[in-house]
Image (tube, rainbow, N blue to C red; front, side):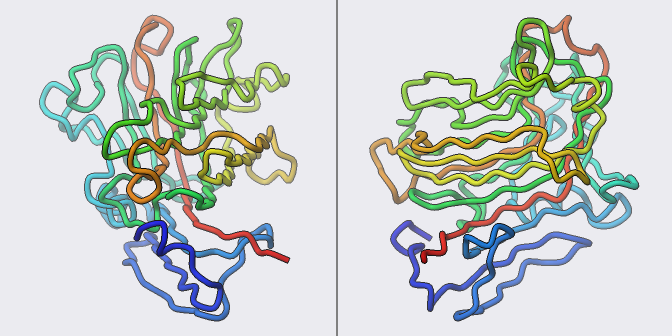
Amino acid sequence: MMYHARKLALSTLIPLILTACGGSSSSNTSIPNTPDIDDSGNYYVLSSASLVSDGSANMDTYDLIESVLGVGSIEAPDLYGEDNHSGVRHITEDSDNQVGDYFRFTIHRDLDGDRDTGKTDRQRNEIKVYDKSNDSLKGFMDTIFEYRWKFRIDEDLRVTNHFTHLFQLKAVSDFGDPVSQPLVTITGNTKSGVSGLEVRHVDSQDAKTMLLHTSQLGIDWATQIQGQWLEVFVRAQFSEQGSLEMSVTPLGSEAPLFTVNEQNIELWRSGSNGSTVNFVRPKWGIYRSLNDKAGLNAGEDEVWFADLEVKEVQKIEP
C-alpha cells in the first residue's frame, strides 16, 4: 500500500487488525464509519497489530513471531549457520506473575555473531518489520505510528560505553541513499562510567544526538531498570519535520520513569525515491557492540519482551 493510498477519508477508513495470541490467525475487520480511537483519545486507529506470547507449550515461537511480522523477520544467531551458535534457540517463551507470557531473548558473548555478515565486533538477536512484512506495519512518509511494548533487562546484564540497542526505528530505502544509522534507538550503555538507558537520534548527516540518558536524571540502573518490567510507549510522525513522543514507565505505575517529547525532529530520509517505497521499521531485541568484550558478561545475557503493539494512527481534527 503506497503513501497516496493511505491518506483515506474518515468515512472510508478500514482498520486492519493483525494478532498473534494463542495461535490465532490474522483477520480483517471492516468498520467504515466507526474507526477505533487510541488510548489518548486524540487519534483514530487506521491499523493495529499485536505480537503476544502464548507460552512455551503452544505455537512454535518463531512461527508465532513470523505470523505477525512476516517470514524472515527474525535475526536470531541460530538461524545463520554452523559458525553462529546453531542448534540453540535464542528466542523462547516463558511466563511470570507480572506480565504472564513473554518472549525471552538470549545472547552469548563468545558464541553469537551478527547474522552471516562475518563481523566480529558486534552481535545481534532481534526481530523486525522489514520489506516483506505487511504494509500496515511500515511507516511511510507523513504517517504517524504508535508502538507499545514491555521489556525487562536481566539483573546481571552489563553494558559498556558502546551500544547495546534494545529498540530501533530504522529507515529503509531501495536505493540505499539514507545513512545506515537508525533514526531513533533505545540503547543501554555507560556515560562517565555510570550504566543507564540512552535515547538517541541520528539525522541524515549521520550526526548523533543524545536526547536523554537515565544516569543524568538520577535514575539508578541496578534498582530502577535492571530486573524491572518497564512499559514503553512511542508515537512517531515520519516526516522531515516530524515528532517523537516516548514514555518509559515501571509496570503498574502511573508515573513515567522518563519521557521524551521532540518536535520538528528529522524522522524521515527521503533519498532518491521519496515517499512511495521508503519506509521506517521497528526492531526489538539485543544488538550490541563487542568492542569492549571484557566489560560484558562472559556467559549469556537476557532481555525479556512482552505484548508488542504496532498501530498506524491519524490525528482527530477539531
